[in-house]
Length: 295
Image (cartoon, rainbow, N blue to C red; front, side, top):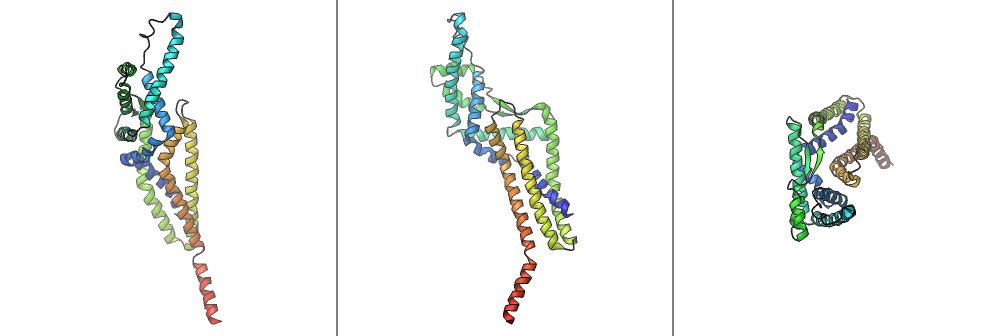
């Protein structure tokens, strides 16, 4: 029972944290809110929004007066210049004071969509809709003549980043159901196993030492598994995805769990240390005090 409890305790901690991030919108938004000021995330958003705007920029009308042989070079020149201009405007929006509110709103909407996709039947994709950022960029571009042409070409649909493809929804829904069930069953099962084992065992001090050390070791293994999973997930990302931004996002989601893991490691080690140095040390101290009094 003690061994089962030691193994179930870190798994229950991971399941509870995963369920909180999947079902609690406020907690999820609070976890990703600091990313609005992360330089890598800001650069990734700037690149995505700029790509979305540039996908709708058309220079055909401007190139009509240019000889056909010179059009490719002129197109590259103007495209580079327009992209630099759009990038500057987008960066001003992303680094501005109003971006954190837009960032939180975008993720709040995305999480509600994710929660609806996982709890209801269907295969609708989950996206991160950057339309508020694009609208702010449109407003900023409309302050000059060059921007007016760009504003007319950029659709109001904005830019969307696919977080969960439609074919992957059933697989993620199955994982969600497993996590939801584990979060309800694993923590009480671990507590009952640990408590029952300590009640039934004869040598409780030795069992307490083993349980504390085992909980610390199991939590340490969970920390190692999370690190390996993080590295493998980042390595599997497409080349177009920013590794620093994805790493910052993964750290924001797993930091609360890692904090709980380290607390579990510390608590287990402390219990084992106190149990190992407890009653025998106290008896030896009392014996020395009695001997000193007798002398």
